[in-house]
Image (cartoon, rainbow, N blue to C red; front, side, top):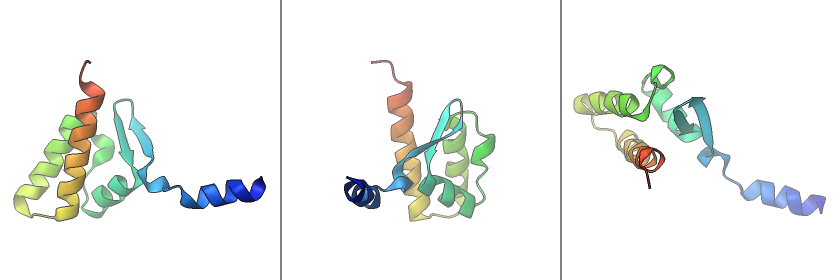
Length: 85
């Protein structure tokens, strides 16, 4: 049983797990790493809209594919978390 658990643990990608940044903001480790890399202050953002605005401002000056992709991912997450169904 212990070997089985160890094998399962090797296959889990913890970079895709959501980390609570504050009450309204959840990001993956990968997103946090990319935002940190480009000095985007995600810690000061109180919601996804502010964070997306900061990313967009950065992308207006310089297009970066990995930043564009996380912007799309965060937009989608914001939609699903904040839309009444």
